[in-house]
Length: 300
Image 1 (cartoon, rainbow, N blue to C red):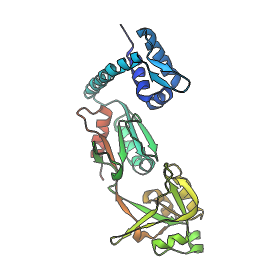
Image 2: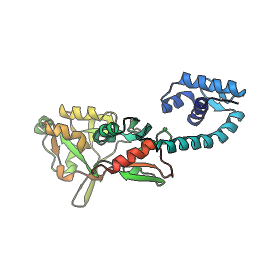
Image 3: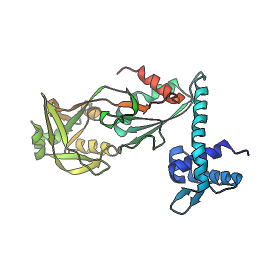
Image 4: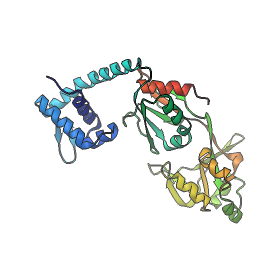
């Protein structure tokens, strides 16, 4: 029986994702194309592989039997193609990375253009989100995370600056009207621009100095989603809405232009930079290997 390899890929993608829409999002295709590919695979095989309703897509018994045998075989085929890719003069293919929004803004802008210039045959897809997810569930090859988000079964290599800081800042007009806080506890008397994680948590602001660490619960009339709306937080601080607490690199342009002034700088919290991490396996896809080698060559 001759069955198009692309149709088998479509079947596996839909089975892994649990639906056409999710599979389309992960693979960069569209639901109707995947649905048509699965339908043609079923026609050629002569069996139904999925039970479809308006809300769910589930494997039939025949579909489960096929996927159990097909998934390892597809992985071997992908591995074989990756092995051949090593012999290309220039690696090619797609590399999909899952990263925090802050990394896309503050770290990758100094890396991605040069990487793409060196490897023009690689397509780089960046999935930037504030809500940390399992990068492999999202169909990504690797992820970038900070220390507290690393998983134990991963290989991690440093990427970007090895030390970063959180910084507090406010506009000159705000500070002239409300005064400069001299201690983190003074922030409880100020209007502060707070961030909220996707799980609903509004974190306290953390400071440190001479071995002393303080966590302060601040208040204010503006709350923004962490990651997705931080530009709004910065602009609101520039316009005098209150004190903002964010990555120093995110605030640096406003500092340079005099739009914001540092607040409580001796208390700013330092933390280690991010890491590129990936599964510890013998064969690494060509595009990912190229990215790893490129990162290792970069100054930190």
